[in-house]
Picture 1 (cartoon, one colour):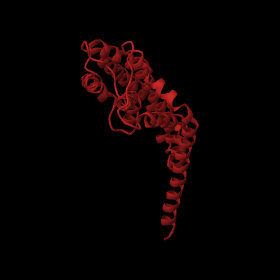
Picture 2 (cartoon, one colour):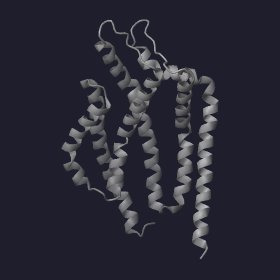
Picture 3 (cartoon, one colour):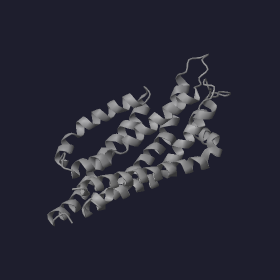
Picture 4 (cartoon, one colour):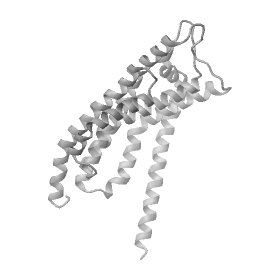
Length: 248
């Protein structure tokens, strides 16, 4: 009678231990990066600084902003660096409860998800930011000093990173929906026109009001949707075979 309760508490203890390990890994990397926090922020701000008018600069309206904002950037970078170890802790906790065929698929999907999220962030940093900031610099009214607070810039960058990172997860989302039986590939093909319209709506919401920026999000979304259907077609067959053989 006590076995289920003991098993439950043992899982809680394991979850606590793995959570502590994950947080410690982030903290250790963060402490190693603190010395370069200012340099990391300068690197993050480079796409904007290169587009500011001659003599333009960023400002800090908060008294402690010049200290806290670079620390936030260092923490963000620390999380990204420690992410593989954090995901390993999650995997080690979840894996014992999965079937063999689920393990074979879950690990590649997680790895692809991380890579795609980083690709989305890189796409935003190297392509979207220069385009957006060039547009803003051109439309600034004459006599207006175009500059921004470092805290607001960080919020903008974080929001854009998340938007593009999540957008680039579309192939994985499509594959998972097909594998768990929520939708069929034939249905996804029928939804193609709606997805295209939705992609442009998302692009209009999460990018500045210029056509180029909207296209830079909408077009990748459409292409990634097609990639997701292609991946699902190849992944579905290897999953069905183990299920027919008894789930092993």
